[in-house]
Image (cartoon, rainbow, N blue to C red; front, side, top):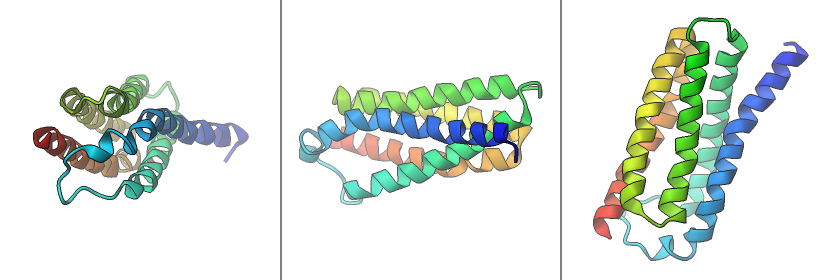
Length: 158
């Protein structure tokens, strides 16, 4: 791999990790206060599970992004695929802001549905360019689907 490819790989992995770090600013401030006092389902994972799961997912997202970016921007559909990736990444951050920052499970539920849609659209766009890149995003979609159901359940219990 060339130096340029290593640079792209580093940026591609760092970008989702930074998004996660920004989201965690809103999350960490509410975990021991507001979130701790919400009614949650018995199947709610313990808080310590979320950080390692999200870290793995962000790294997989970064590798997926690298594969697409490394194909070259001149490949048909690449720029549009990268825009969809960017939108879903912004929506990923926004969910933490709405759920934990604004402490609003209802609007977070609406937002996470939009996030799920953009993850699906990103997967479809990535699949046309690289099947492995698209497949790397499937665990992310599964986790966000689970998170959406958890978000719905927390909203309905509170």
